[in-house]
Amino acid sequence: MATELIWLGHGTWEIAAEGGRVVLDPFLDDNPVAAKTADQVEADYILISHGHYDHMADAEKIARRTGATIIGCYEICEYFRRRGIERVCPMNIGGTCQQPFGRVKMTPAWHSSTLPDGTPGGAAAGFLLFLPEGNAYFACDTALMQDMTLIGRVGLEIAVLPIGDNFTMGPEDALEAVRLLKPRRVVPVHVNTWPVIQQDVQSWAQQVQRETQTEVILLQPGQSLRLA
Ligand code: NI
Ligand code: MN
Image (tube, rainbow, N blue to C red; front, top):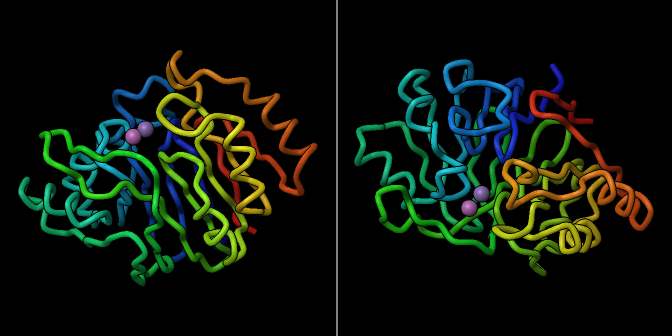
């Protein structure tokens, strides 16, 4: 089975891989553009990039119903442990862990990470997934950073980048991120969920296609792509 990446809107993804079903940054029931409700998601693993509501709003609900293991920064896993969720896999920036669906590396992100109860969520992160058909980099919420040069050196089949601006990098910096990462394909996310992160995705795509070797994949929430 080829790994399928399904964008559920904003920063939320479902990854259907041979070794299990993964949900990244579940934000569904209060997400104005979500393609599914939290009840419709099946998961074995839940990846959480940082403690903000628009990245983990439905994590607890999904974890309780499915028994999925939560993978995230140490402080985020402790937060879920305090709430009675035992299946957690605490990590931190730069570390990797082997999971049945592939190896997970927690990458740096320039962002903040306060949890819903006001406690610190540790460092904000992105995820580099070493999947059977290729490497997928989810930048999650971040500014443009030079570290992307290093991240790109592993060879990326796909990069998922925020382009909404205001809370993360905007279109101009995301174009520069593509130049640093050099992925085969790029998907823009964290955009057009609300007016504050409204951008012209089409014209960004045209500029990336014109100025880099990377192919831009524009998805609507609910649409998916196959890895390799
Ligand atoms: Ni955030
Ligand atoms: Mn966000």
